[in-house]
Length: 442
Image 1 (cartoon, rainbow, N blue to C red):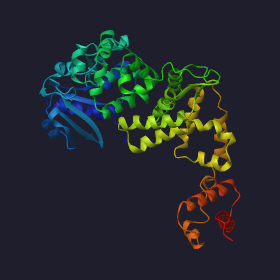
Image 2: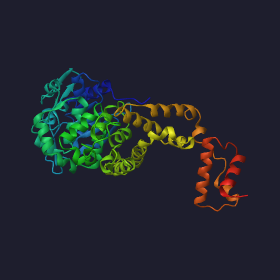
Image 3: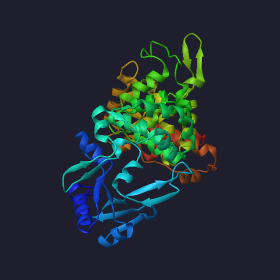
Image 4: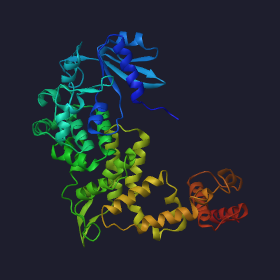
């Protein structure tokens, strides 16, 4: 079983540094969560010791960012980030400090992003050291920059989106001066790399309140620069008989509310993007229609996943989730072979979950979801052969029968698999006879 970071090992690191004469505290997310009364996750250490002194004190270290004063200390194989107190001088690129100067705890806290993340905790004395008013802001449930928000956002543009993430994660408000600065500088989020935006967006979507995060990003003007395609779903009307909840944007926001806790990012992205093709396919005929919106949406989702630098595997899965989400409406009318092919899709559990969420965010009817679960139990979950029958003949067999390799091969083998899936062909002899008939052989 993999060990996780814990307070005992983190305190041991602090104590060892203190005994060597260095002021040392726990910092950041651990302190924020502890003050809130929540379970802490991270145990980062801030110290007056320089990186070389840290490395001399501990036998197992990794110098991940020595120029910024950061060393990983490994305790029982678990890494703990130990960073030297520092001041950052200038941010010409809007991300990295031009120069780092080692300093003390007060100066170190003043360089951090938000007051809720700028507190220290002394685990030996059992006291919080708060130079920035973080405890008061936790009490007031607000996200506020440390010092002038103009300065903090100029230093690192990603903080514009991080403010939204913390507000969503903690269910806090963004303090007015801070939120006004986010709105003023929203367009500057485009200066941040796609990879960093992806990571922050992923944390929002898989965190506790994804809907709040996306809505807040929209209200503050960030979303139109990160995901303009999602912003365009606003005011796109839907037929009331299928979508009594409202337009495409409202439906998508409700869908985010129905996701399970800590969803896989692929599911979360698919929920956000499943109807992304509707604005482009809206027509008003006998009623509002979105003909082909799933295919158009899949292409749009593909472009978005590429733009945000998701892995090829993640990209392909999200695209298929979007492309196939509308097929659930046809499952009761599918031939058995077609249904089995549908049910055996890679990560069908996510397809099924997306459909459940889609239904709960609209008409609320789960008939087709239940039907698929019943069919999976009937001939899928208990018998892999039912969904993936072993081929009874191969391409080599077809060649031996005198057939030339080509497109006809694929057609015949697919028809044969359909016959197996339907239960009409069960033996090799029947398969050979089927192939001879399909190929017109005597």
